[in-house]
Amino acid sequence: MTLFEKIAAHLIPADIVYEDEHTVAFRDLHPVAPVHVLVIPRKPLARLSEASADDVALLGECMQTARLVATQLGLDDGGYRVVMNNGDDAGQTVPHLHLHILGGRPLTWPPG
Ligand code: 5GP
Image (cartoon, rainbow, N blue to C red; front, side):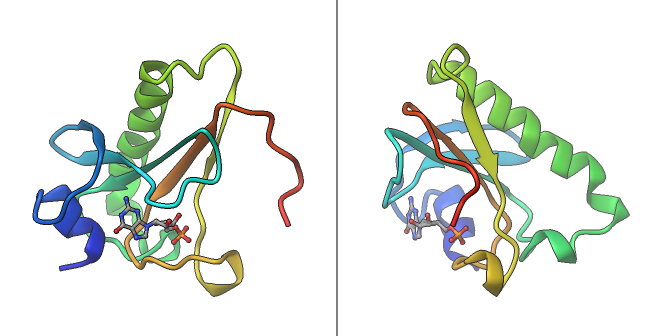
């Protein structure tokens, strides 16, 4: 089981803000913004580049969860960023596909 599968299964603690049949959203352990939430599919895809055409609906579910959670956490007015790191050059550290929702302050662009 991946670390994030264990969080999704409530086997290790996390501040879960949303969950449904296919996705789970929880606060990042080391937030880099006032709101920093991760959205994962329950299915343990390692990264976007390992997804297939069979995962199109699941990837859409992740985006839908990100949208719902951003609204739930009051980010719609100020705006927010949704990021997915894929592989080493992007700085991916946990090999279970996830979206970062970042908000609650102005965010710089481009990222470093
Ligand atoms: P990545 O760098 O792979 O895109 O993002 C992984 C994220 O997972 C990081 O922002 C990191 O802080 C977060 N993270 C790592 N381990 C844990 C954990 O055990 N619990 C939670 N809630 N977040 C974690």
